[in-house]
Length: 173
Ligand code: IMP
Ligand code: MG
Image 1 (cartoon, protein in one colour):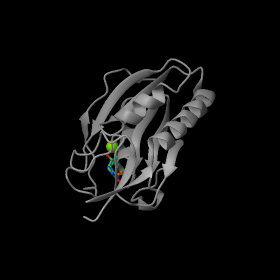
Image 2 (spheres, protein in one colour):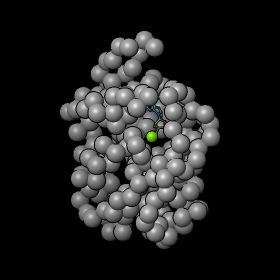
Image 3 (spheres, rainbow, N blue to C red):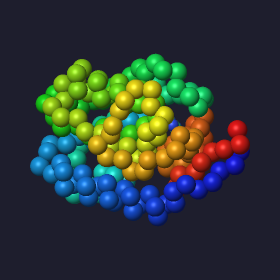
Image 4 (cartoon, helix red, strand yellow):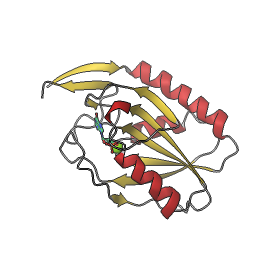
């Protein structure tokens, strides 16, 4: 399979620093929890948090993934629940990429309604806005991209390629 660079490590570092600065300006003074959506957002969340200029708590959630497929089954289930009490807290959901919108819709609903968060914001490193099956607009978006399958910087294909330090397009399948 061919792999071509879409965003270099330098592109990523620059954009994540900008996002961190924006979040610092917008959300300073909030008792914020960054909620990392496993596994893909681990790298982005780690970098983003270190670019936020105030104290941020950290928790994790995992939802059902594509398995080894490149398209969503359409059913989203919570595989790992967060540990922190989110009631009346401010939560920033941190995702690697939004595609159909199904995962973020479910995580947002779960944190807001089931966990009772006061305020829920969303940050995604990548967005494929034309691929939505349900509407979803993130508050902070690193890059909007065409609906191609991408890997690296936490993003996998069948659990491979997560540790590539840049974003590449996977093609020739
Ligand atoms: P959604 O529920 O369709 O929005 O899918 C979101 C999830 O699917 C992301 O959190 C990723 O784990 C995965 N995903 C979507 N597009 C890609 C891609 O291009 N590469 C790798 N994973 C992807
Ligand atoms: Mg994901």
